[in-house]
Amino acid sequence: MTVTIRPLMAEDEAQWRRLWTGYLEFYQATVPEEVYRTTFARLIDPGVAHQNAFVAEQDGALIGLVHYIYHAHNWRVEDVCYLQDLYVDPAVRGTGAGRRLIEAVYAEADRHGTPSVYWMTQDFNATARQLYDRIAKLTPFIKYQR
Picture 1: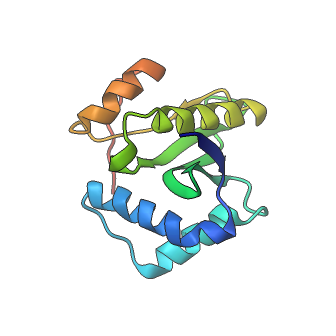
Picture 2 (picture 1 turned 60 degrees about the vertical axis):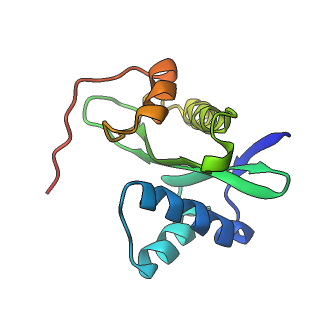
């Protein structure tokens, strides 16, 4: 079965919502309805250039998503790219969809002139970290948050 990586489109909202809900549930998080609506609207709005999404599609169904955000960085002239959310439906994990979504962000960041792509995951996310260890470099940074 062929997996296609493509930008998120307006007609994807119901399937995107299902996938993003799965992602949030994995991290035991919830967001209000207003955040769902606002996030989706930003992700499909061509006027919001810094906030973007790709989806993985197989046989007409969305099986994965990735959200990424460009932002300025004080240690670089060019922007950096934050890969904020990555999720593949558990039924199709191990098929390469997650890797292809990350590689799509890498390629788009390169086209954008943004060589640095970074993301975070929880230390317990062992399965995803096996992929991340193959395609990125683990940094020693620790996240703090207010």
